[in-house]
Image (tube, rainbow, N blue to C red; front, side):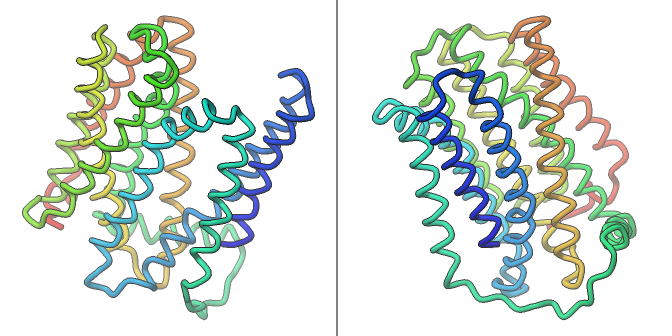
Length: 324
């Protein structure tokens, strides 16, 4: 995991060097692409490794609440990122942003030094065989399979939010840079609130996942119809709370359902979903906003999420029955 963390550190330093040494945006493109590659490689290792390590650090009865808390911290970083970037950029420009990110990666690696894990003792085979083994484990367990597909549906919102919300804030809402950062940063509070709702023992997990994902889709679509900051903030909070609740319960369910011997493979599949689906949906959202504008793009993406969730509610029997 430390080597993967180092790739994040190198990516941040590469961005800092490109900003300082290369005068034009066109000259910085290769460095930007290389930094993106390094960050992607690092994330591919760090994301499943930390979830697999959580299964070793937490006792069996602690897996679900620990997974929810883990996801809360992830969503906090996702939500506070835009605000932190805006503040650092205002104080020290882009160099401050890149060096600040590098410093945080160093702190994260230092915090991991005290974590002790154990080797699984498994003999690793060919990569293709291990991928098939993970897929077979997911396919053999109806609830695990449906949780993975529910995660795929939920992550349909992540790409459009990353692409479209800054566009909405700057064009339709007319917010200044710090106001945009605060607007997007409000998503962090909503995600945290949704994650805290996931900690309640009274929630029926399966139905909560389906209802929350559907509500997030409707609220995301409604963002395409508003033109005031207050209404947009209320809808953004709804998307964040509903999404935070759904994804926290999904992560907790996957952790609880994954067999110990195959946990790393299964959470790796979840990580692939969490990377590929937002990237693909973000590209699609970018094409929509270029062709039809931000309002229509938000409306279409939210409607797709709500429709997909409605279809899931019809056929996902194991998830509907999942009490948690």
